[in-house]
Image (cartoon, rainbow, N blue to C red):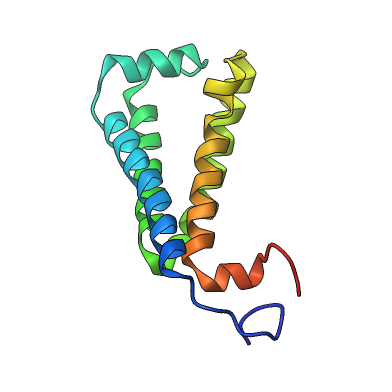
Length: 140
């Protein structure tokens, strides 16, 4: 059985596959860069964390960097992409909560995690027929 419905799931079209991997690649590259910058003890990272109300700590920034890199790598590997998307959604939710708590601008800062998560899930949905079986736009 392919999912909740008994109808067979079609493989994604070439265009859908390319669009899905392009969207996923944008998310992966962003997360890799974001995670990597947190591993290097740059003052701007600690200043940003302090502005969000967290202690000025290289340990905290490195921990968030490792977590971000782990989510990116899990999402990049096709066999673990669903787990990576789920974990990344949690990570982005935490980032959104931090921005909400300090009153960051809504469209640029607060909702950026939502934009990134939506792009990641849409990319995964376009490239994975099994996910489309579980999350169809409509049931026929």
